[in-house]
Image 1: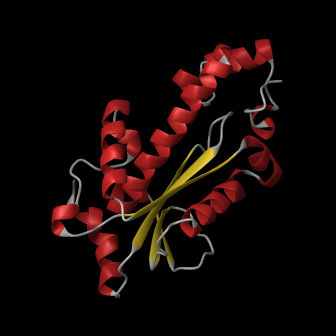
Image 2: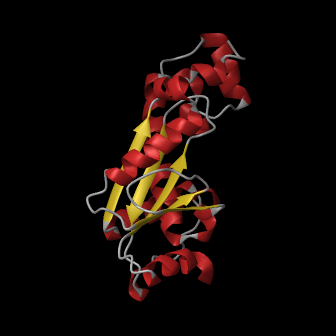
Image 3: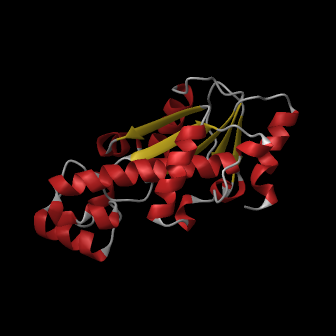
Length: 201
């Protein structure tokens, strides 16, 4: 873990903020499944930092699951919000992502004094700092990215049992060649984003 993982948190702590939420999404790009956001408030004392936390995309599935359990055990407050394909189709993926972020933040058991968000600016009840590559640069956002990824992946694994022909357990809804071929052969499910797959059906 690099030292700058807490750089942003320290800045807000120095402003007198006690509860700083990290917020990240997963699932903006897939053809199927929800967009999922986690907002998490982590304890930031010296002995509280979990080793090995980084951007979820840089971790193996096994490592993510192990870290996710540690995050959930330590978190001061944590909320996951998902919005389904129908909502994404209605408002577009960026607006759906922002709404899921608001819902996750406002659903926390403890109201945050500030929120660090990966690359997206939203209007919410507390001050927000949008950080480019935040999932890599901020400990709190990295924690949120891991919980969001593990939660959404589990959902897609369960979906694969209902729709086995699409390989959701492997592609997690992303547009792999095999997934696109399955859409062309079998059509779409209620879990597909119609605005994303219109070129394939």
